[in-house]
Length: 491
Image (cartoon, rainbow, N blue to C red; front, side, top):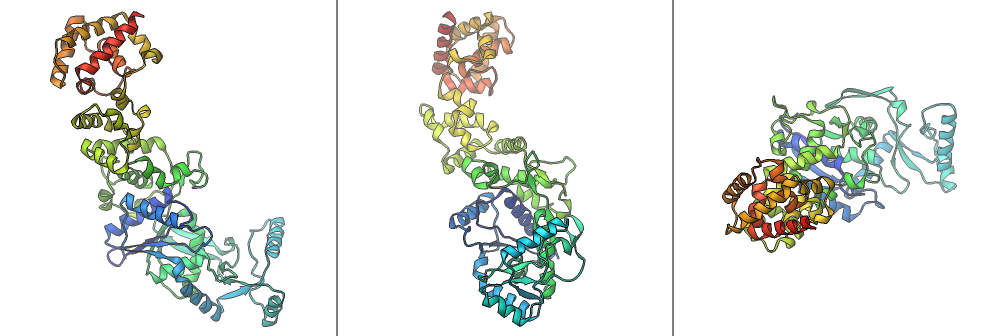
C-alpha cells in the first residue's frame, strides 16, 4: 500500500487552538506521505456548531503553515457533508443496521445507576433495538424525538492489526452499547461522520493518538456494515506532562498550544525536531538527535515509533532550540527577528552600527531559546551587556567578592592605563591588550585576570567570549565602565 496510492489525513477540530499533540500527529502523517509520495488530506471536523470558531480555523491553518506542514487536498469541512452523512444514516436505517432510540436522559441515567450497582460496565443496554411501529408511534405522541443508534455487530471481539501497536482486540461489551450516530436534530456524531468522510476521501491509512483506540473499535463495524474497505490504523502514544497527566489545552494551554510557541518566537524547525523525536529515533549509528523534518522523511517508518507515552520535557525542548539557533547565521536570525517583530531590544542598541548589531546577535544567538529573548534583555544576559552598564551596587555575592579581591583593583587600573594608549578595539588588538595586561599585572590568563573585567562590563563572572565582547563594546564604552568601577572601589 505504501508503494502507491497512500492516502492520509489530519482532521483537527476548530474548537480550540492547534494542540501540540495534533501538530505531532500531523507531522507523522506528513512524513509518511512525503516518504511514500502519498496524498495528505487536511479536513476540519467542524460539526460541533456551538464550539467551532473561525478564529480557531485561522489558528490551526497558521500553525500548520508555520511548521511547514503542507497538504495536497483541503482544507475540507466536515460540516459541508451533512447531506451525505444523512444519506448514509438513512441507508443504515433501511437495511436495519441502525434504529431509532427514544430513551430520555433520565432513563439513560437510571440504566447507568443500575449497572453501577451491579458492578457492570456502564453503557446503553440496547433496549430500543427492536421497537414495534406502535411503540415508536406512542413515543412520538409523547413528544419524544429519537436519536439514531448503530447496531454493533453481535461478536465478542473487534480486532485489527495496528501499524504501531501490532495485534489489537477490543471486547464489544466495553464499548458502552449501540452508539448514537445522529442526534435528534439530525446532526451526526464524530465516530460516524469520520468514517463516512474518510471513506469518501479514500483514506487508507489513519494515524492518530492512542486515545482513539476505542473509537477505532466503534468505527470498524460501521465500515463492515457499509461493506467499505477498512483503512489501516496506527495509534501513536500520547504526550503527557511530567506528572503523567494528558497534555490538554484546557489545563496546560501555555505549553499545549502551538500558537504560544509561534508568538514567542520559537524556531519552527526546533519544534518539529522535538515533536518528531518524542516518539521516534533517527535510525543512525550515531543516534542523531538534531535533524530537519526533510531529513526525517528519508527514514521515517511507523514501525519505529515508540509504544510508550511521550513526556513533555521543557529542558529537552530548550536544548533542541539552542541546537537549531546554532545552525542559523546571524543574518538569518536577524531576518527572522525582523519578520516576527522581535527587534524591540535593538532599539536600545541604536548607538551601535548595523554591522555591530549583527556581531552582537552572532555573539548571543547560540544561547537563544526563542526570538522573544532578543526583546527581553533581562533574560538575555549577553544582550544586556550592550544595552547598559551593570549596577555595581546590586551585584550578586560571587561577583561582588570577585571585585573586592586585591588583584581586581590592580587589573582594572592597569587596564584603564592600557586603554589610554589605544585608538580603538578589534579582536586582534583585544588579544594583545589582554596579553599586555597579564604581563603588567603578573597574573596568568584566567579568573584572577578575566573575572574582574567581566564583572565590570556585565555584572557576572561568566558570559560570552570575552574578546568578542570587548571588541564590540569598543574603547570608549569599556573605559567608561572601568572608570566607574574604580570609583566604586574607592567608596
